[in-house]
Image (tube, rainbow, N blue to C red; front, side, top):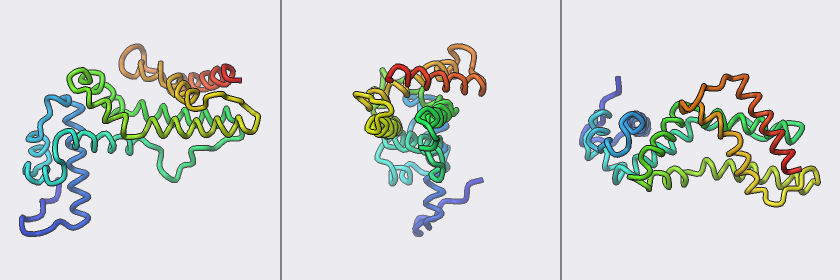
Length: 211
């Protein structure tokens, strides 16, 4: 049961402020993913979080800001922990398999799939949603990391790739294409062993195409 909100005359402690933020984001994420963006109101979020609209508006100017914060929250949840090294492996193939594993784990997480479904379902009515998700930086960060890796390999004459950023984008799309489609219900969900085999074959095909 959530702890009570601070009284009107008192300022919340840092711990209370963090708890309040976490409560808002958890409730808002649940409502957005369950009911959709259009059907979720500021009033519904405030009521489910056990607070007044005034308290909610003190933190977020509108529903779009809450949604953007939810997107950032979900992205942070599915990222690898900060102490886990991303670039690790004796060969480029091994490094890409490792990175591809992180990408798949993030994209196939239940909340990430829910967010993807929401974007597809409501992007026509609310085109700003896709823009919000795109600007949170998860895909751009992954592309930048892989492009830098590919560029460094080219400089070492191991794999000369003319356009590392384009190649990085293609790699991510190759990794995600079928597993994400199946996880969304368009086919049989892939098992852990199937995902590993898919990833290894994808990396091999990618490197062959750019060798």
